[in-house]
Image (cartoon, rainbow, N blue to C red; front, side, top):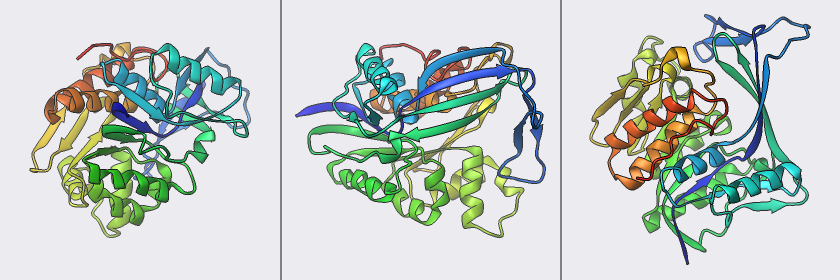
Length: 325
């Protein structure tokens, strides 16, 4: 039976990224959940400064990122038997990442994303077609052994039953790190019911606020800006550890002993060219640290190093650190 240090679940996509000076960031005081908006002139033809084609998706990005640290990883993803799908499949082969759990389906179209970035602010908005990833089914869990699952955004209509299959493996001492996606965050009651199975819950700040404000209807908006408050409230929902990524401000976390952690970003603001994939890069470092060091503090630091470095290259994978731990 095959052994993997880590199995990742989620999407696999081809990314098309471009920048423009005619795209800019505006503040939105009307919404706590959407404090900033990416804007452009309505009805205009917007010029593109440059175009980049890369690969992405949560399961793909974290698989590539952890492989760079010497983790034996296998992504459980679904792709179409089309040109893009075969590109992704061969890319994994080239990276020497196991394709044993990759499902290739003739009837599916492989997903892709269009990433629009502001040339000035380097912030982005992503238009995503998940394609085959929308039909991902958790399979072959008895055909391998592992210590860790990393679950990124699941977009299948049956994500609840698929995630339930994953949680059953905790009886076999498999630990789960979960970075829930939009569909999970919209189904808050179901999400909360799964949290007791989760070793590490990973959210960005806006996701953390969205989750808690949905549960606590009369919550004070000032409290939602308090990092320690967010962490402790999320920990009380059931996971062993909670991590909140703070974008350019770094990361904060709490463990099962209610020990708080905070690490600022190590990035040089003047060198940043792209923020796409920073969250997945952090997760790659975090998971590699948990697997190799078995130390939460060291894992957080490795996550910050990796996420800071990826900001200097275009694409979710091009700036990832390559260090054998």
